[in-house]
Image (cartoon, rainbow, N blue to C red; front, side, top):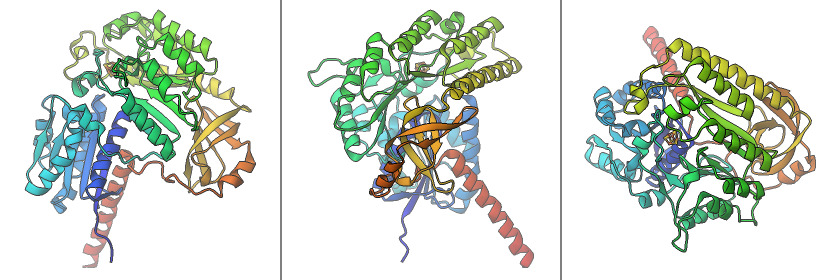
Length: 495
Ligand code: SF4
């Protein structure tokens, strides 16, 4: 007889922090007897873990919640829950409940650990619940079960919240002030992940450089000391990454420790946001471009093999052509391996929303396309130089259909190559044999190892993520709707 297990679907929007928090939500759902599915029409609960960083993210989420209306009408017992940064914003919970009366639960970022209670309350009473807490109890959140979903990768929160109040950013308002986890809790989690076989651990925080957790002697530890400690599990082969760094707080001590470490990657994400001092001041970033350049120079001097990635906003209020050209100049100076370029979008409740001199949409678009053109030029040039070089690659996933492996270099750059799925989780030397613009392909140098690995017990899920990407889940939903319409039409014609 077929098992009648309740099914859940989580749609995750936004950053790595949200992906990890979805793993915590999945942990709650699985411990309550739910199992994951990819099709909203089969789900007994659909959770939207939302993002508020940009206006278009919100529009997309609202559109996707709207698409669930008919499923909910046909399946009234299905629970729809909306959580994350969008819900935490002032008055948004009421707006969501009004706009989408079929939504059952709205919860904020600080109610994550309470989600199990909200779920039980809804299941028991059948009543709608809206719970947005202004404060959070961090210890509760750290005790949550986690259903890890990303193969060889594991994320570890080292801190929550942000104290920086960049004038364009909603994060401090929805995630609260910085709270650092104690050192021992982090080390315990990292060690147990290594024991379980995870190979790449990313330390997460909005501004990891200002980490200030308490150590076992009761002293406040710096990020540098924490890095040194997580680098010390020498009985394992692993990588440590961290995000996100703030250029004002990335100290020489941290750069020193990374350069001398065994396990910490030399690929560093260092958001610059703008190349103009005027813009950096207006953004409240607390560094000028000379400070940023000196950090880049120090990284390059201490780690010649390092690669930088960055975030850039174009069209911030008051940005002139001269300001924008300074942004292009810093791109040429830092020669980033990846740039996440965004058009400035107003966020309700932030100081920048009310700034005069908002840049018009046409200029913003034109600047973004110039930024992207330069980005591609730089990345393509850098990638071309990789041809023929051999790199140590962590094999992260296997695509069964294409029969190809995907792995990451220390810099974070992805490479694909032939091999068997048993290579997933191994560190292999891979030679770059083909470069197509910024995409690289390679071949395993130690071919004899493939034979060895094919005998090992396969450990990692072939699917890298069991939490379906929001895009895929919505695609499945739309396909199902289309097929249903076709079938209904067919049936009505037959009748
Ligand atoms: S550092 Fe600035 S951009 Fe980053 S989360 Fe904090 S306020 Fe937002």
